[in-house]
Amino acid sequence: MGNKFSSTEMKFLLGMGSVLALRQLGLLIVMPFLAIYGKELAYSTPGLIGIAIGVYGLTQAVFQIPYGNLSDKYGRKIMILIGLFVFVLGLFLGYLAKDIYVFILARILQGSGAIMAVAYAWVGDSIKEEHRNKGMSIIGMLVGMSATLAFLGGPILHRWLSVPEMFLVCAFLVGIAWLYILIFLKEDKANKSSFAAKERVAIITYFRDKKLLKLFAGGFINNYILVSQFYVIPLLLENSLGADGLWKVFAPATLIAIVVMRLAAKYADAGYFNTAALSSFAVISLGALAYYTGSALLIGIGTTCFMVGYMCLVTLLPASISRQSEKDTRGKLTGVFNTVQFIGSFMGGALTGFLWGINPGYSITFLVVIGLVGALVIHNTEEGKTLKQALK
Image (cartoon, rainbow, N blue to C red; front, side, top):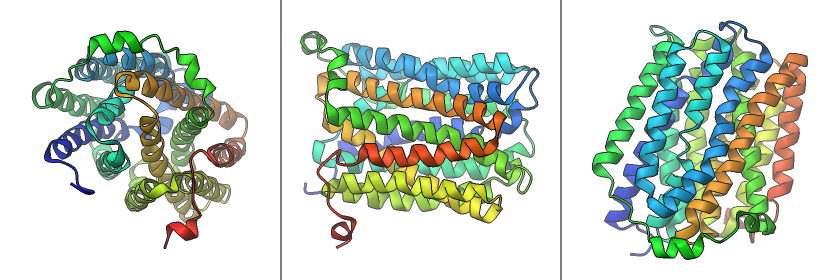
């Protein structure tokens, strides 16, 4: 079979990738407007807006491990269906919200549909180890394409639809994903006897492994950066481009990031994970420096650097985690990883909002610093080769 996927693997990858892409589309159509929209809600403050954006990550963190554990025991499919249903309920509450506190509650409910650990575990179950990075990159490409569509379509929709009405569009899209999984994806049959034997593996043991600990820290920092950027960039561009013009920055940045992500996955498969991951964090920090200038052009370049780094890391880190796990405990390990990631999401919204309320420059400075910390943390995570060798 060489470097090719089997027909079953490819069918699964395209199916799961499409489901996650629809879910991502539902999230990102609204995401660029949340920082600006939050200012219109009753009782809002910069700190509460940050919490509203980031609290989704906190409840994701709380529920990742239970979902992952239950998927090991009862199957991946049923847990993804439950999670997506809860997510849709949260989207509908977002449509009804009139003040910042109800909106925060809606985001809490959205985060309770924590399916990412289960989805990554299902991919790990279905794709051979030597092809896992490529499999993750295919899913990442589909999710990236949905992000591009969201950044193009969101501002267009926003001309006719309010943000609450866009939440209804999101609920409809995620509903399509739910039906697709229910009807078309094959039921996962968990090995319950094997699960019972493996269940006694304590979660704390994962944090004693230095390699896993570095990957967990990398995931935390990457998600912090993601949510923080979605707080900072729309506000920096609000006066120059406005909410309806954000596509001019995000769409080309995402297209470039997809191309680079594919190259990064190729080099990681060839043994260059360390170089690819370290470079991704460094590029994000470099791009964030442009935010100090206030220039729309330079902020656009900085946004491209962010998207390139983030898209690479969101492919490389889960694939590396998957390589460290066995099938019967993969849900648990990916659950721990995603828990740490989404704590980073919460901190990205809450801390950035707090710092922005004091001085916007503080938020940008912390973005630069935490990107550099990510590069230092991920260094020597896996056997690496130099960039010069990788480009040969």
